[in-house]
Image (cartoon, rainbow, N blue to C red):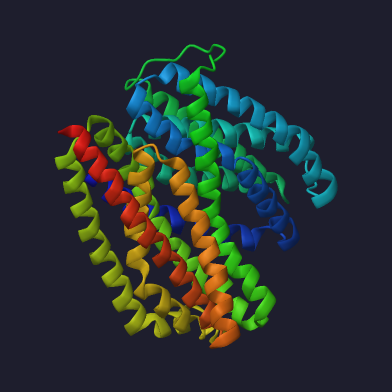
Amino acid sequence: MKQAFYNGIFVTLISIALNFLFKITTAHLIEKSELTLYFTAIDIFTLTLLVLVGFRSSMVVTFAQLKNPQMIINVFRGVIVVTVLLVWGLVIPFLKHKIGVDIHYWYLVATVLSLSIALYFSNIIAMYRLYNIINAVTLLEPLLILFWFCLAFFAFDLSGIQPLFIATIMSSFGVSMFVFAMSKKYYGSVVIKRPEFDAKAIKFIKNSVISTIEFGSGIVLLYMVVFLMLKHFSVEELGDFQVVTKPIFTYMMMLFVFPIFRFVLPELSKLVSEKNIIEIKALKRWIYRYAFIVSGTFLLVALLFSSQIIELLFPPEYAGASLMLKHLAFFFIFLIVNAYQIAFIKASGAFMSALLIRLLGIVILVATFYVIFLFFSQSVISLIIALVFSYVGMFSVSFFLERKIFKELEEENR
């Protein structure tokens, strides 16, 4: 798992670079208005399919506890069918007639189907802890989308928004076929049948819904910062955050925080179900060492070189983002450790507790910001400090809850 974890960071870095290359390439070849509509459509599809991503944690934990792929996969298949039909009936007409995405109806249908199937296989390989395939998909996806876009644009002389959707559809189907071919030797096929909604299936669905909301809450936290900036600060300060700070911070999370949910959560689920106290302690020590090394490096780079890096990569008007990054870098360690804590809490089956911690983070962000803004300082840094307090607050609550769950696990193991 540790080797796959480190490999995951490396392939994520390559994936980010390839995605940037795709965006740069399309920005030069596709008209800005059409490119904007394409990315808007993909964002809307991604958000509406968020429920499928949220199922992943619940599938991983439930499989570790019950070892019942028949129930889990058939329930998930039912959810996918319902989700696709809802997106087909509600989202596609919205994109066509309200947003104005000017492409044939069946391209949008194929996009929904391909993205849904890719998410289905992504969740399956996470459930079975197939780490090497997960890393391969991370690298393969941006490569395929670049390949299909270039083929459609240059070889077949397609223009406008059409090659973009063709690239998305074909790359998603390509990823699905790759996962299907590579993963069949690790598990048997599950017969398609109507799921039986017994107590275990209902608990699985409940945890999946909670996990989806919890996953979405983490995204809402950053967008809440954008909303508060939009309301109380200038466009220049919002630009510093949107163009520089948030992307860098998001990429740091993709590289060093998200792999904890991708690799450590499945391992923790297995260890918790086995009540393997020794291995859980060893994994926690490893995460803490990892957190200190990564966050320490990020802090040093932010303090010593962030101004020069931003000056090199961005126009002079974005210089104010350096101070934001320095404040966030001091507390990046809490993000990494809290990711482990949430993973452990989920692995124990306490999905509602994980959700409440995320919601508490949003409350702390808003409350802290207005206390600082109204009584102490109206600087934009007050909002960054509020975000920091939010992460520290989630860490603090998770710390005590994690200890409580771990003690209960130790007592059960005696």
